[in-house]
Image 1 (cartoon, helix red, strand yellow):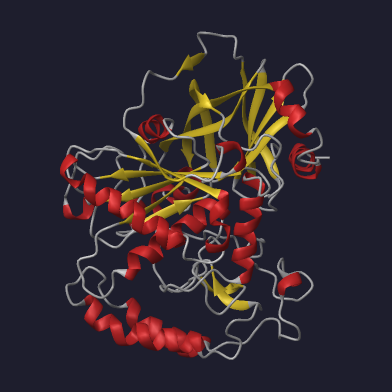
Image 2 (tube, rainbow, N blue to C red; image 1 turned 45 degrees about the vertical axis):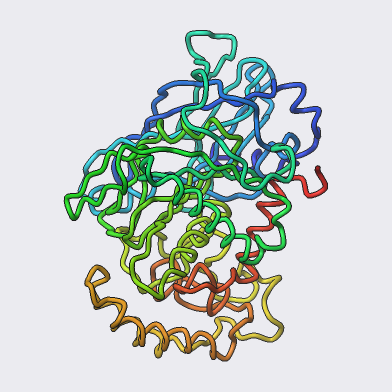
Length: 478
């Protein structure tokens, strides 16, 4: 049996809570370890190298659900006890690097390096950490390992002194160990912008908890605001030759997409975020270009200034949509907007994301338990009419001053098609998802992961979100 098959069986089939809290008390000390890495390569090739190991504050995560049972993410971190080879902890995640591997730059053979981090409870004794990546059949194969000894003062650094910026509770429903903890950081907010930042955090947190299913599960969350101050207002916009001294290094034009906002300054983000107990990170950027980003178990970003009257709701859409990526591993369900990716999903390979599928039959679709009774599979919808509208909208220049004026009638028509579709509101298998018009399918005609609107998450996405809430939090905890 291949090593990758063995690894995935061990990590996904072993009961996550077989030892309960006793496993945590026996093998961990209550703190947090962060391992910083460099991820280098090009298309079809990658290598990890160890940067540093840092001992942070108290472990904010669940103390029973230590082994990942969700099977999400391009990569899988595993932590095993070196003496007994017992699996102690695992988590799935995705990275900037694996997205970059699908871009023109990587296809051309360019090599690049991206900094990354993995976090886990601080071990009581030496552990072996390993990173595995999925192959074309979605099986994990080990690509990196290292031994971490908490007793080695040279290998393990202690976090530096007091927090760099103040941490303020926004929502506090209980101890971090039994809640989902979100840390919100601002970028491009100068000292004079901090009142705006506080209002922005309140606005976007409220927007998330107005959205199903977060609305019904608000009591399972804590939200922490970190008051990060930048030297200048705004963030980098390379295609306009605009460069700011912003604290977190976020920028537009990631992978050549004007609206895609990420940062490569991982160390800075992690050092600042370590002041708060967090399971997930959100970064608000103080700029006015429509944009954001979200990578599973890394962070989400969203813009916070809208200068066009009447479309302020787009900021709320972006924040919640991008958090869906980073929180629950949800895929983009749209397929008509341009991206910087090439063949992000391989033809004929079932994606790991819970809300897209390559299976166009009732028995193999991953959400078959949620299918509406008697609904045709694949499910017909008004795709030709929708595509004709999107083809016109796709030719508009999003950065042009008259963009929204020209877009408005097209947006109205597209939403009318989705709203009046024969199977609107029902779970089926609708063609068009994951950046491609054919060969991939989504669960519903419309969803927060599909259209540029304030639609709720559909039942399949909602179930994935609730699974994550249940896994990270303790719904019965206080």
